[in-house]
Length: 106
Image (tube, rainbow, N blue to C red; front, side, top):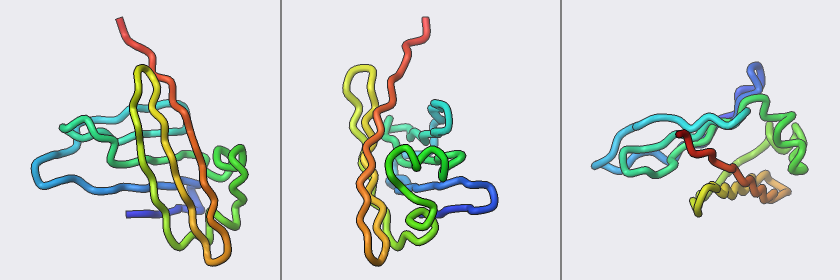
């Protein structure tokens, strides 16, 4: 699932769940909401205020509104989640790399 809600400026990507997993919870980091499965996989990403957030990564509103395909991968290493997103339009392929530091709660 891929969507961009222009009215609310929310960009969402979701890979879906395997047959043996379900939704477990979210990791909220500012304007990023990461959906985590019962297998500890990040299967979805929501970006609030997407046009402002993604502008920092060189993504124009035209790219955001005109994408035809999106791919993403997530790697967790130590206390950091690295997110790679590729937005594809008819004419442009825009890679985005986002590092999300995680804080341990005591």
